[in-house]
Image (cartoon, rainbow, N blue to C red; front, side, top):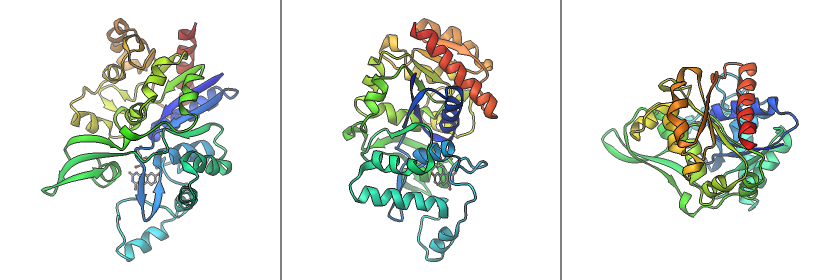
Length: 322
Ligand code: FO1
């Protein structure tokens, strides 16, 4: 069975590991968000690709759930000693090796897909890991910081300001002229099942479906498209999605996220949607729109619950495929 998953962020990586555990014989392709990516000290850092690669490859730090286990911060300390900013981004020594290899390959013109495949030769994630695009797309937010209007990179907003500054606009800079990375549209068109991970709808799934051609690929694939809500109750599970959604004036609920994605019957993305048991009201709200909604335990607090959630998503997709 060919499963294609759209994923970003820490929750997405965890969900993908559950799918791999639940469907060990499936051929899994993950389309990763790259709009979090950032140039730092001349290195290209790709947080969502690396969270997936490290989580699936066994190298992730188990507490932070980003960056490498057994990490040290000597380079970061000496960069600070040189007054070489930014000082708010946690650049670990082991993680820097990933960025050095990736940046060399990009400088040689190999492209982000080939660079990612090369890094995965070491990590063996057990999935095909694809960037959504090879073009540079970076999420920015227009905010006023200390009285100054800023066009903040998402990482600065997220890490330095802990998503705590009000913003007036959010943009995926460069997405209009981007094209899907090699293999991405094919992985969606050729899938038996497409899953949308419980990732941040604004900064993780939003950029992926904004890459010209990918929303159409999702609408036209013969595979059922099943998503998992990143919102349980009235709030984000662990990220700070709620601040982002509030900033955009969006209702923070499992049903509202599905309505943002839209039902495939009405030209949107979803055939099915999983919500937590405490959001069962979404089932009646979404059914008229043609989104088959099930309420199941959504909190991934260990490997067993994560695998069960993946099982539930695959089961709903199978039910919708007939
Ligand atoms: N998140 C933080 O909250 N603080 C950090 O210093 C930080 C550093 C970092 C370095 C590499 C990397 O791949 C991810 C890192 N993250 C950090 C997480 C990152 O901001 C988020 O995982 C995504 O961008 C949001 O999905």
